Length: 236
Image (cartoon, rainbow, N blue to C red; front, side):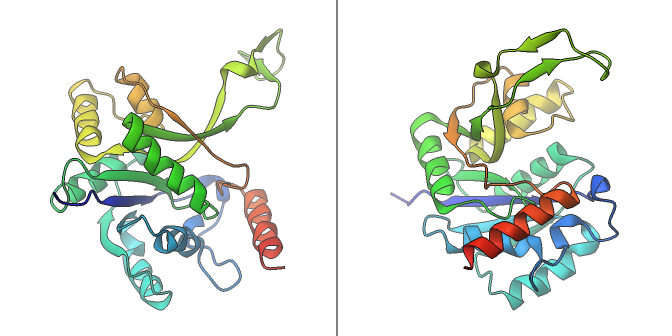
């Protein structure tokens, strides 16, 4: 019986319009290392991750190849051109993986701009897929949540105990993810914001695995400052 493989599918196809920078945020250098390399190193170092596939902006593929060689990301086996949005980029990555891996293999989909994912989060996600079939990393919602139709005022709160703040990794078995995207295409669902939302839009359940507030997503300059602070703290 062949060993089940665990593949990290890293999505690096975003241009980062909210960041207002000419360089895509996944390629911004932090302490002499691009953000995406921090992310790849998290999966490179994890003993249960077998191989890595990156979905990348076409103009940055050569840069990724150079950086991966420079920083010894030996598990990176596939680089795929990104799509028009996140959902399409994930689908293109899955279409690549199906030619190399078994449908029972586990795929963890992760944002390239979440460079501080811990080993425990990755391990818990793998175990959740093994035990329950799907996973979304999530943390509790601790803030008061207000409902507004005009962005000016609110007269109603939403119970925060019914909410989860989702992160990545998210994933499932390769075959299930391929079927999910085939169903979405057949039903004209083409711009879901994440794998977890796509699953619910397609009538499926996805199970929670514990995340961390340190598993930060870099979408603004302020997020980048927080990440730099985390790196400095870890290096003390």
